Every structure is written in structure tokens, then in C-alpha cells.
Amino acid sequence: MPPERTQPDAPIFALASGAGRAAIAVMRLTGAGCGAILRHLCGTLPAPRRATLRGLRHGSMLLDRALVLWFPGPNSYTGEDSAELHLHAGPAVIAAVADALVALGARPAEPGEFTRRAFMNGRLDLIEAEGIADLIDAETEAQRRQALEQADGSLSHLYDGWATRLRTVLAHQEALIDFPDEDLPPAIEQALLDALRTLAAEMRAHLDDGGRGERLRRGLLFAIVGAPNVGKSSLLNRLADRDVAIVSPRAGTTRDAIEVRVVLGDVPVTLIDTAGLRETEDEIEAEGVRRALFHVKQADCVIGMFDGDTPPADLPQNAILVRNKIDLAPPADGPPDTIAISVQQGTGLPSLTEALADRARALTAAQAGPPLTRARHRAAIEESAGHLAAALDMHWPEMRGEEMRLAMRALGRLTGAVGVEDLLDTVFGQFCIGK
Ligand SMILES: Nc1nc2c(c(=O)[nH]1)N(C=O)[C@@H](CNc1ccc(C(=O)N[C@@H](CCC(=O)O)C(=O)O)cc1)CN2
Ligand SMILES: Nc1nc2c(ncn2[C@@H]2O[C@H](COP(=O)(O)OP(=O)(O)OP(=O)(O)O)[C@@H](O)[C@H]2O)c(=O)[nH]1
Ligand SMILES: [Mg+2]
Image 1 (cartoon, helix red, strand yellow):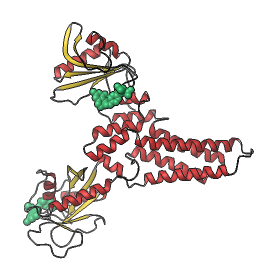
Image 2: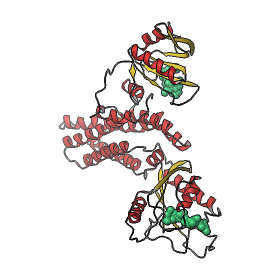
Image 3: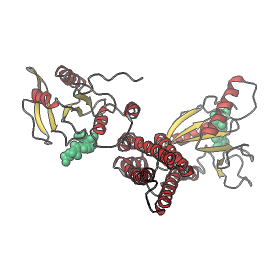
Image 4: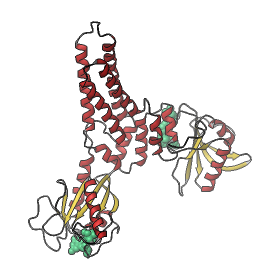
């Protein structure tokens, strides 16, 4: 159980800018009562939405000279009276202002609490709120675009459209239940079933996207595997442009899987270097090999590395084969589609990087329409589509209606229109403080 939220309606405040040395720190404040707090700090309220330079005073003590913004509700981000204090970013200034705010009746905000209030006040739905969280977490241009579209409502529009259509069909179904003996045109039932079928098919198509949007949101996992000593750790260091993994001429150097974050094809990719695959008596190395095989299963893409003529066995069919050390033995007829490189000399590395970037783009490429971006959404749509399929199998109108109501409810939880109280701590708990 999450802790009980104390003083749920008190004005809340938080540092909205990042911590650390900076020119300006933005302290954000929202909730009924924050006008009074602001009046105490500044003397009088600044004109709405006008950046105004004011001395901030607590009692007779001058705390800072700050740019102050006053956003009377409901025309604010949260929909409640809000304010921003653009402070000098020193830690003592921030601490003094925070202390004053607490003394004046505000409390520190929990992660995501500003956006949670915006949601509660109907300023955005759950899908849009999650888009804002993703926008803040976006590290690449492709992630930024996907998150901003979601925050701007494109995905909500799709899901709301389904809900609206389903509501209409459900109303017709209920008419059939309530007036079975009246002469409702028989075509009504047929049209209703057709509408359900179309809706279920659209949901299926949305679900069957190969996880592209979810992958772009969370980033990809690429695993480098192969026999000992072929140059896996050397390649990792080269792609990361840092000396991350130990390289040595001894076979069996790497045991722990070593991860680095890189960007390939505008997608964040976690590259994993693994222990060389071989039968071994060494227990620690054997554990490393087990972990390597585990990562082969988890990875979105496997980079199968070798240095002779024989690529590693038992790799997934779509593995990218890389033949290393061509400075020692020029490539003979290897398997087709093999990328020949020498990490030591840098030969072939641009082609390899391009192939990896192509794969990263292919795994996350946008399709028609806004993409699914979260497991939460997938589960809700699976549930809804499941109930639609069940509804289509039902002969009795009452039972069909019940399945349709369950499908409707799953869609409602998706956007946050119904029954989501239990979800909110999870969704907003993932935000940073101050958002
Ligand atoms: N200084 C500052 N920068 C910011 C924000 C903020 O709150 N403060 N944002 C927030 O996180 C983002 C911008 N998003 C915002 C969305 C809505 C409103 C808002 O107050 N809307 C009102 C009034 C609009 C108006 O003045 O025309 C409304 O929509 O009714 C403000 C910011 C990013 N930059
Ligand atoms: N000649 C040559 N040597 C290379 C090349 N790439 C790596 N090496 C050398 O090969 C040896 C093994 O490199 P590593 O990167 O440690 O190999 P590994 O696959 O990580 O090995 P394990 O961790 O033991 O599985 C080191 O001595 C590297 O300097 C290359 O392109 N050409
Ligand atoms: Mg290694």
C-alpha cells in the first residue's frame, strides 16, 4: 500500500528546475491558498501571467529578489491558483524560500503531483500525462517526437474514438435487450455485430505493431556475443568511445555482462558485452556464459562476433554477423551478409555502425497512426479486445452486453475516464518531483 497522502488539498511546492549549480531555480507552487502565500511573500500579487521582479520577504526578512509569476486558476497548468518564483539558484536561497513556504502552510509536492492535480482537474487525461513524463525522459529526437504527439492528445484521440464508437454500439445493444419484442429492424443486430468486428480488428492492428512504440520509448537492448577472445569487449569500447570493458589477449576475460548506453539511429541502445561462449570448467566463467545466453534471449538484436571463418552457432536468425580481425586474415568466403571489420585498425566500423543504426530504426519505425507506447496501454487494449471477441461469440444479448460493458471499462481505465484511483500512485509516481 502506498503511504496515505497527508493534507491532500494543501498548496504544494517543488523545485521545478533541475538541482545543481545553475543561474536560476524555478520554485513552483499550486493549490487554493497559494495566492495568500504569494501576497505574504511579495506584498501584492503581480498582474496575472506577467513576469514581475519582487523582493521576497518572510516576516521582515528579505529572502531573495526574484521574478514572480502569478497564474490564477483555472487558467494554469494544474487548473488551480499557481505561481512561479524564478530564484537565484543558490542552495541557501532555495532552502530559505522552501522554509518560508512551509511556514506559510504549503507542503513539498510528491513526484508528479502537479500533473496529478492537472489530471484531477480534467486539464489532461492519463495518456497525455504519461506523454509529458515521456517528454521529460526523452533523450533523442525520435523519442521527443513520439512523446510530444502523445502529450498533445493524438493517442488519446484514437482511444477516445474507440470508446465513443463502443458506447454507441452498446446503446444499440441495450435497446435490443430492453425491447426484444418490439420491431427493431433486424438489420440493427447485423450492423451492431459489424461495428464490433471492425472495432476489434482496429484494436488488433494497433496491438500487432511488433512493439515499435514501446521499444522507442524505453530504448533497445543489443547484445554482443561470440567465442572468447574474438574482440567483443574491444568492439564495445569502440562503439561506446570509452574504455568500459577490460580487453586482454587471454580468452575468458569478460565474465559479468557489461552495459553501456549509446545512441544508434536516433534510438537509445543499451549495448551488452558478454562472456565468450565456450564449454568451461571454471565456475565463474560458466556463470558468465549462462548470463550471455540469457542476454541473447532478452536482446532486441544480437551481434554475433567471430574472428575465423565460423560464426557462433545457435544465434537468432536475424542476428547481425560480424567478422573481426580482418587485419590478421583477410575475409575469405564467409557467410553472406557478414560485416567484416578490424576493431584494431578501424576498418569496416562505419558500415557496422550504419547496419546497427538501420536495425535500431527498423525496430522502432513509426507505422500509420499514433503508436502504442506502454505495457499499461497494451494490457488495457488486450483486455478490451478480448471482451469484444467474447461479445462476438455470445448468442444471448444480455451476455453480449455484459462483455461490451467490460470492454468499455477497460478503455475507460486506459485514458483515465473511469475507475483509475488505484492506478494513480503508479502512474504519477514515475514522474520527477516538480512536474
Ligand atoms: N515557466 C514555465 N515554463 C513551462 C511550463 C511552466 O509551467 N512554467 N510548463 C508546464 O509544465 C510547460 C508549458 N506548458 C504549459 C501548459 C499550460 C500552461 C497554462 O498555464 N495554461 C493556461 C493558460 C494559458 C495562457 O496563458 O494562455 C490554460 O491553458 O488555460 C502553462 C504551461 C513548459 N514550460
Ligand atoms: N589483430 C587484432 N586484434 C584484435 C582486434 N580486436 C581485438 N583484438 C585483440 O583480441 C584480444 C581479445 O580482445 P577482447 O576484446 O578482450 O575479446 P573478447 O571477445 O571480449 O574476449 P572474452 O572477454 O575473453 O570473451 C585482445 O588482445 C585485443 O586487443 C582486431 O581487430 N585485430
Ligand atoms: Mg571480453
